[in-house]
Length: 218
Image: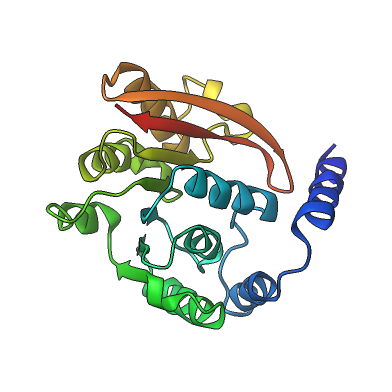
């Protein structure tokens, strides 16, 4: 099944996305620099771009930069006066992402902040609110990241959380995997938080069987 999922993703990319030198160079550079191949797929990246545009986002927050592949998709959604803040734990990843953003001509719109995301988010209190937040970092901290997104957002802010199905492992109430425990805690938090209107959708494709949360701050 996985090969067919990949083939369908390739079909979508060929028909709707086309070739993209900046993104291809980004993935090649990430591999050369030893980054794990855990970026969103091309089709998923375009979804992020379109959702940010549909939200009219002028300020975007990304939690989990890696090599900047999703960052490029999100930055492309911004208007000329827009800005994106992206948080990355690993200094090496941040340097790779900076080079990729410069190659894509988007570095002037993006502020990469290095260090533990929870600390970076705490230091951001008082900044202008974000219109769109994409969360794709350590899964055990997802509840803290969403709480920060609410605090740093505004009514109407869009929040996307990636990797919330994990090939169905989210159903395993007895799991001791911190990523599963964190994801299940996220669902509990989303369902109980009166500031959020949320759903989740399963996905299949080049990245296997997974899914994402789509939420709106009330």
